[in-house]
Length: 221
Ligand SMILES: Nc1nc2c(ncn2[C@@H]2O[C@H](COP(=O)(O)OP(=O)(O)OP(=O)(O)O)[C@@H](O)[C@H]2O)c(=O)[nH]1
Ligand SMILES: [Mg+2]
Picture: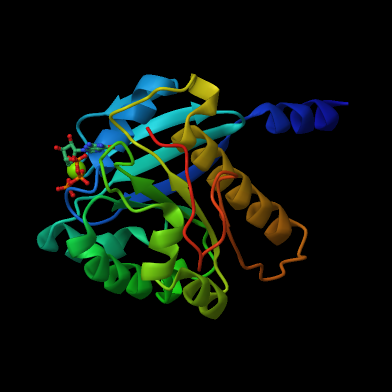
């Protein structure tokens, strides 16, 4: 009787998940974290460096680390890899001049053993800007399909703007993306728990986006 009670209580507890937010400097990571704070019940740990917030979303209590993207900040990223269960990688879609730099950094990340198999949400940010690259362009520039296949990663590309929020809360691309990431982490957790872990690789984008290799349309902001 007591055992059954404890089991039910455990199921009610939120799952603790740690994710890191990375990407080049100026891509919009800190704005993203601030937007999460506006949209989702959260707690700020202002004493922590780097900045960390805890979000409560669905069944999850999510610790989110906002890591700096400048050269000095990037040197510290790797110390968070082991603890992170998932990644949010933010791209400034309006900055074509840095897309090769993004490709080098992302490729290095996805081949890092400490991140192997961990799901990655790529946010194609700054879609409100004129001439921002669409997700399918970004997939092509980053050779993402090849990367995903070679590293057997689970990856989703979501177009967004962290400064223009025109949709209702539950339709926000960043919330849709975060929910996908948490579900992917949850699936891996369940697979490990039931000893049925099978490597899964996939790349998905939001439903407005057609596959790579063709010019695609997207809802503009
Ligand atoms: N137009 C537009 N500007 C944005 C968006 N997101 C962020 N910005 C701007 O981009 C600049 C950089 O944003 P941050 O959030 O500070 O960038 P960051 O990735 O945290 O940069 P580091 O901390 O230096 O690594 C700021 O001037 C933001 O106002 C967006 O969706 N659209
Ligand atoms: Mg920042």
